[in-house]
Image (tube, rainbow, N blue to C red; front, side, top):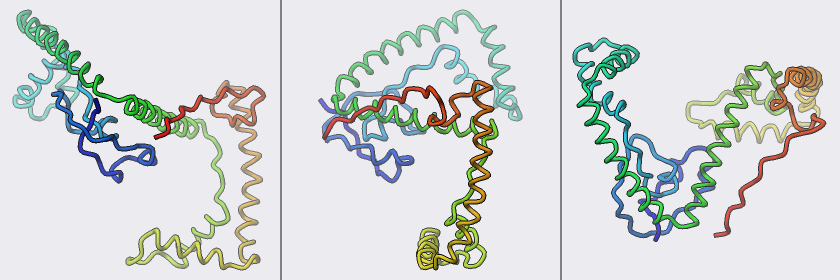
Length: 256
């Protein structure tokens, strides 16, 4: 059986991952799920119903029930204040209350296990493969963001602007974008102007770019040597390492 839901517009999918998703085939889906609708899950981004959500633990259920009361009593409380009060009240809470919440949690947990089993049973092998690939894509994107942040914190020299980018910067002053122009239109106009420039005119930008690139190469070499000495091998370009790490295995998608 096939899991389906109303297909989502590709324009709403984040970043470049949209083109990697294929819509699921149409079929009925009737499993009741305990999910939130505040944010779309990975399943929803693939056009599938959202995965069943785990029930709240007794402590978090208590926080959910008591938070409005504390806010009503203390409207100026910050989130930190609320959590501090809730934590103290929970430690002093009546045993009968804790037992009720624990019993509710056990019952909801059992229901969750059953609903999840029905949900997963309706997924096709293709849907599982797509979901696995999407999870990997999301993790890879997260890893890249973390790496960029780490490299910035470690003070990696910034690569200089190319000749064309220097030309664009100049055009922002000489021929700025008009209110009636989109950035794409302005950029296209600059690209066409660049292609029409004589080699002698381009050479001005090329010389500046080459000069800065030579400085950058020296700076990045010194920085990478320092990173190796400090043990930060992961931020060094693999081509500069004697024993580079093994590349991550690529997941081959099944042919549709």
